[in-house]
Length: 123
Image (cartoon, rainbow, N blue to C red; front, side, top):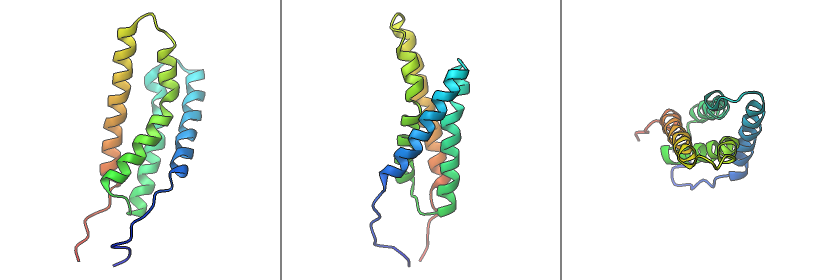
């Protein structure tokens, strides 16, 4: 039965460290490239690595995996938001690009959380 009724506490510092790793990799790639979509590969790669690890462990349900992936992805995307918000002259472009980044992060996080969730257990 394992830990059927045991409530697991989440160690959020581990996930914040993964987010900082994604932040640093995004910042480094952003300093070399100017294309947003190429820079978006760094956070997506971090999320895919975490998804593979979560799938290997098989102890994450969908909501837990989604919360973790959204936290790591949000921290990793801060350099992209910072670069977009540095130009205040065209507010509508900032809103559209930020919305596109948030929607793409949400889509990638949902797909990765679906892949990372543990299978149903039948007793």
